Image (tube, rainbow, N blue to C red; front, side):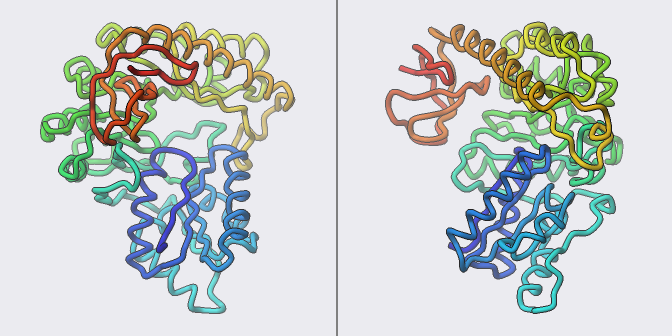
Length: 418
């Protein structure tokens, strides 16, 4: 084993983990585990710390390097852990220079344990051409990093910096390389991908990028988007969704709440009516679109009536896949200083929201029985439909293939195919 990367969090982290592995190995690392952390919740940080301790017990001789958003926002937390050998920042983890610095630090007894620089100083996102993803049939392409918005609950801008985009030509080149390596599906990732292009010449939008990919990589079978902010979705993006079946009919929305006052206190840029109108518009132009959403339960000052508005949003927007987050105060954010909802109430509301989501998912899975879906095979006996629904296969199929399958049943979690 040379370099192993343990990845927490978002699809962007998954994409960056391939760059981390490549750059660390090129710098001469071996018998090394890199923990690529997430900072979105306190629970994510706790899980990373727990994993680092477990890795040290299992691999007493290995080098353990901690990086990612949590390492960027609270480097002292991980530097204080005796199980961690080095802590490096989010910019350093992707650069040859950062890994060369880290490698040199291991050879110096008095070298600092942390190499974490000011992420706000990052002014561009260098294209990191990745043409292979270990153990995956779906490929990820980073098109953007950072965020210019300052939602009151969110620590991520302080882990990722301000928004910066990868030039369109570099993105298209990356997709072409992946398709040449027989990847059938590509997922565009970033922190806030619907803000794409504002810092590039001519300020192209995400929809322009999507159209360029579909035009210049005709061999690409499937293009999928990671989480989007519906209020930033541009006309070209909607046009592409309506006109090209290769753009998958599954959108994951950053909604966070269904109550207007809570949305205002979150410093979101949309109202409840904006969310429902967007879903209606998309369904009109692409009727089979399935929606997922991020929702927070128990945001500070949330009353029962406010929470009920979020519960009702599941039905009003026709959501199928929910990512439910019990509110977690992150030190340094404005929401951490607001009047908090009791923890037991937060947990109870999160459970109710997950239950509502489970009901919505079951209803959707029920409706899939009897249909024929094109399924990307991810392992010999499982895959995903165009709508991102997991499918269990009756007989093994080669991973990476896209085949038509008749859906015969479901088990409450995934579809079952004949």
